[in-house]
Length: 477
Ligand SMILES: Cc1cc2nc3c(=O)[nH]c(=O)nc-3n(C[C@H](O)[C@H](O)[C@H](O)COP(=O)(O)OP(=O)(O)OC[C@H]3O[C@@H](n4cnc5c(N)ncnc54)[C@H](O)[C@@H]3O)c2cc1C
Image (cartoon, rainbow, N blue to C red; front, side, top):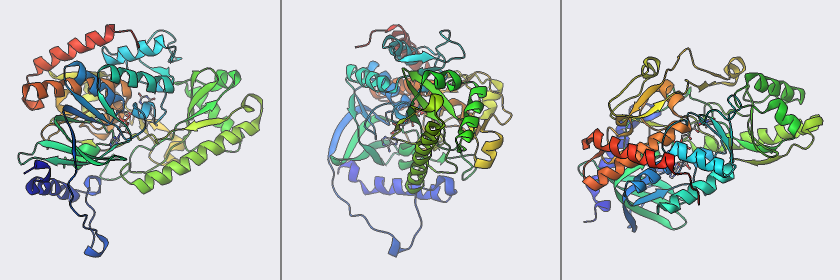
């Protein structure tokens, strides 16, 4: 019998989900209800559309980096992405600013190639000195990521959502199911990587997970990014990724225009030419796995950005030509599910600067918790809550799922607590984690061993090899 339709495997998956429904609202994947408000979906056969060494779910900073690393380590790779472009928060989220990226490997390759395309400006704090934090051109990022993935012969599939995950009798993830215009399809692999940001795959597979600060929100707010046209005057006065003074002046300017933004430290990044990316908005207490709440937040946020730009334009002067050119396809989600792994990164690790024998990423960014309510935002739009992080290691174990075999995580959905996540979530770290997950998955598939059974020395050697090659590779096609 085809294992996809193995009834026991199917019930195993269900059982996993039901178990977590009892743990608290933050772990619930199954809603309770009476027979009259439940619909029994009929079973049906669906095609197994492909089999790969590695299937990467989610094509954001972590997913793209994982797919490229796995391919460069010799694996056949399928990369499945929900939106119409690769890049996640970098592109469909229109972030425009990379933090904590001064690391060897794909981080260095990316900034070098963006620079060669004249598609990056450095953090104004340290002009032309550091590649740690930089502003990039969003369309150039889309182009570059697609080029790089195609060069590595990664089978990319956009416009496709992961909707199911099925394990075999031994608890090993064997099949993911997607929905797209091609219908419902199954994909099989030796190893899967959850790079969905929100931990969709881990949750569907029945892993334990956490969300927010406690069992429920308070959680970090969401922000819808946008791009505006900006005159040299506006850029000179307000564009600075790090200057609190500029953000405060912009806040006052908005008040003068008759509009108090929901985010008390409005930020403007100069993307090049007469364009700037903007973060003016906060949406509070929204859970990323509540589609209605995310929809309402997106519509509220888009309205705010549109009306804000109109109000600024009415100020005249440097603002007289301001237009909201576009808003992001995807509202920016800071907090998502954190899938439990074989190690749990804690805020204590950050404070003491933890070191691990299986370190795969050295994170240096501070604890950055955006306010949980509009009122607290007025007092402190973001804060470190008194925690001072010193450079710390993320171990590979935090990327290996605890409850399900054959599953790795990369990016913001790895295993850690609320305050640790508030530091390691930035994209320079997501890239480094993706690289490690990709290499581990490729070796695991080749050796026919589970990720946790592999010798770390072997993974480290291959990780260093591909990081060295990536760091020196500066040609872009
Ligand atoms: C408003 C905001 C501002 C931020 N500011 C910065 C900053 O200035 N600099 C910085 O470096 N970081 C910043 N961060 C943090 C950082 O953006 C994220 O933590 C980062 O995106 C993590 O990368 P990721 O690949 O894990 O997730 P994501 O970028 O979220 O990528 C996940 C990908 O998976 C896809 N996906 C999701 N679910 C599914 C599914 N079911 N099926 C298929 N595909 C799916 C998504 O479409 C997306 O492409 C910010 C975040 C937000 C929200």
